[in-house]
Length: 166
Image (cartoon, helix red, strand yellow):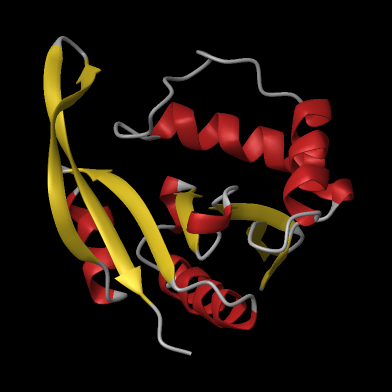
């Protein structure tokens, strides 16, 4: 089930983000690099829920959060039609169409909110992420050279976007 996050999800969302950051080789933050708390997530849920061009979607299976998708809308008049995407799914649930379903729900939400442009970045070596984004209609716009430094090596990221017609 994909739904909008509510304040009561804050503790579970904080735990989910921590676990995804522990499992993933390609998230911006390393495991335990930042202090993720239920209080901070509650504040984030409140803040993004109050903005027309932002939201947090969560994927729930058997009352457990297994994925999240943050949608952070532009805050200036000239970019309010844009939204930046951050997605994370527990490794044991990847490859089960959760990402696809979350992106389908995202697009439905975005069209209702008059969002015209969705954008994200992805590490070039993140083949499964890149495959999902391309499948969902995102296109590579450019490359951020040596954007991230992971385990002693520099990695490039792709800028990707999808334009919505509504």
